[in-house]
Amino acid sequence: MRSPLLSIIVLGLGGMLFAEATSSTSPASAANEDSNVQVLLQRIQHLEKRISDLEARENAREASLQSPAVPQPTATVGQTAPTTTEPAAQVPPPVSPGDHEHASIAVARETEEHYPSLQIRGFGDVDFSASDQKGSISGFNLGQFVLHFASPLSRKVTYFGEVSFTAQPSNYDVQVERSIIRYDYNDYFKISFGKYHTPIGYWNTAFHHGAWLQTTISRPQMVQFGGTFIPVHFVGLSAEGNIPSGGLGLGYNVGIGNGRSSILSKAGDNGDINDNRAWVATVFARPARFYGLQFGASVYRDKLTPKAGQNFDETIASAHVVWTKEHPEFLSEFADVHHRDVLTGRTFNSQAFYVQLAYRFPWQENKWKPYYRFEYIHKPESDPLFSVVSDLVGSTVGVRYDITNYAAFKGEYRSSRVGVGEPRSNAAFFQTAFTF
Image 1 (tube, one colour):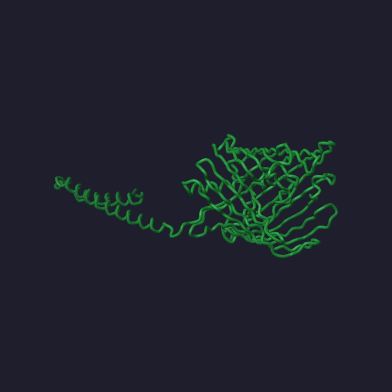
Image 2 (image 1 turned 45 degrees about the vertical axis):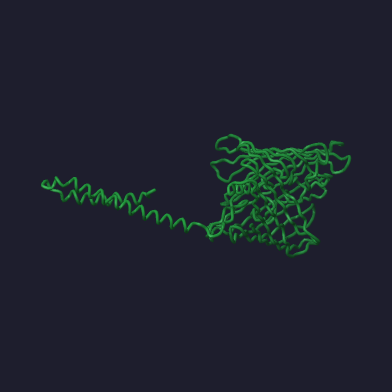
């Protein structure tokens, strides 16, 4: 197809030639006008042919330059596909609940046409910490090594898995963090089976086990891996999708499955601890007019049996408001955990929240991102289920520096008081987080 510029050149040359010929035409030479027009048309056709040949040679040259010598890596969870030169802005894109496994699945589906087609991506981090807390030991830690597996099984059926390796004093703790098979019927209904992050609030589904994905080094204590305040993992089935709502951008996520095991920080991977199924429901909005804004609420219900003969009803209500444009970034979340002893009728209520603010500076190619987080946890001392949960009042201040699109340096200072009447502790943390 001829470009508009070349067409203008052709018409311009033709017009000049035609003007030259007609201006020299007198009444005496009117009989030769037809032959002059024919000559002009022939010259225009000759010019058009030469321009077409030049276009063909230029297109062939550009195609040869654009063909890569080696296959380029595909995009992965939470990042864009790399090019031959790095873009100016080193900005990880904002994230939303469930986006990471969906992104990996989408990449696998788009880059391969045969089934199954396995794609593997990874995350890792190396950490250093120093604290004045009594009994703490400063030094380096290898952090978590995480692998993501994504494979389309058909046009509408996909699989996603996540495995983590965490360094322990004598060995590595290997955990299947997520294992999901999903059927995408349409944008309004997608159903998944397996083990996934419980869709309570925002952070627990937006940021998974790769530390590179989140702005900070640490997660808020209320959604800490291995923590007890909320159930981080869930085993069962989940349905999700969009709710027709125009520019309001409503969405939902509902699930039913195994609740907590006898160890409250663990999910019932090999079966529920009792005959009662847990369920969870989340509704959120992402208004089209305010890109990056999301707000929503969640409800979680389960029956806990920490020991034989002990039964507690658990209800968790949470709400969140986030703004992920990074200029600024604002994350906030609140959760109330209600326990009721089925035998005695006694009730216990615990609350937790965090507020995090960050801003990515536009200078130096958007590499610098300072942040601050305040978090709070309160639980009744008499709650028998939360004996390992401590009250917390803490602040975290830090900065993230993105050295590439796939690696970042982070530094944090934390000041917190854990437990009622305990002295405040101070700690410094440094991390190199990356994805590959």
